[in-house]
Image (cartoon, rainbow, N blue to C red; front, side, top):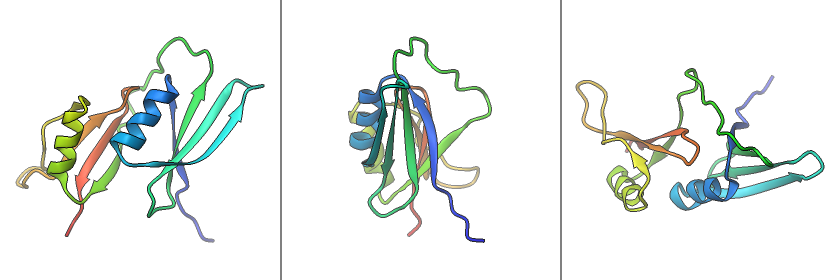
Length: 128
């Protein structure tokens, strides 16, 4: 039986801000949108051009309180070809960032950036 990962869903408070973060900030593209006004929610699927794995943004209309992220979810991870350029670009956009980090005994090869809803995204240097 063939299996593959399809998507990860995150619930967002402000669809416009979240779309800007993931498209302008991370380079993802909107690939599908499903509006269900009668049920008061919209689903937006984002992906990178070269991949088939998607991030689903779920926007529930009229939500007033931020979602509780809990203490079990940690982050999604995205690989980039130029970690320093990515870091500087996110810094210039004013995103909340950690310092460049590395695992013990390794040079820095990742950092975390936070989306508008508080979800962490790990940015990792692609291996050469």
